[in-house]
Amino acid sequence: MRFYLLLSLTLVASLLSSCGEPAASPSLQKARAIHAQLNELSVTLHDGMQESLAVVETQIEASLQAGDSALAIQLARLESQLGELDVRFHDWNATVVGIPGDACDHDHGDHGDHEGHDHGDHDHAHGNELSLEGMTDAQILEIQEALLAELGALQALFDSIGSAVPEAVNE
Image 1 (cartoon, one colour):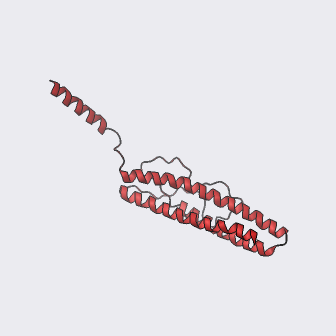
Image 2 (cartoon, one colour):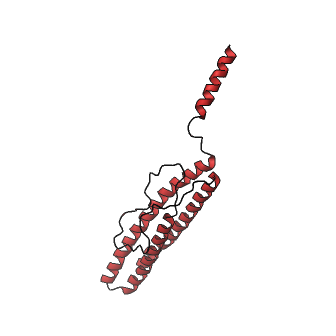
Image 3 (spheres, one colour):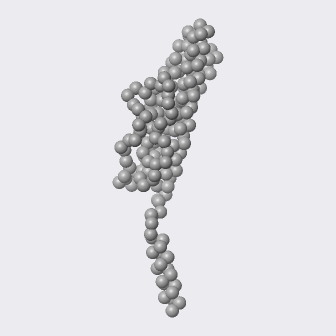
């Protein structure tokens, strides 16, 4: 009798545990963590680019008012590089795709108004039609890792451009 009771309890427990969503694979868990990291880092990078652009624009105006056209030209080059980087960032951001089955609870690129910010031929409506549906968990992870690597490259480029701002001002 005890055997049947134990068998019944085991059967009920296994049925209850099989209901609902299956546990995410380690690859999918890692992809979700990377995607969350992408969201955080991209906001920080974009905010930093916008702050740097504002500082450089102010420095250009100040150097022109002081009659230092050579410095203004150097700063204008930096401003151009930051603007090009911002366009690359927005192009990258348009390729970011969420994890299938996850609710989208973050902002897709509307990083505020950019007064005087030339967007060329892109906009801020990043409701892209890209989807990872039907891909394996390993493929989803690979895509998230590639997105993170590209964001890292953009961050490194921003760091190198940003480090030139004080040099241009000190010369």
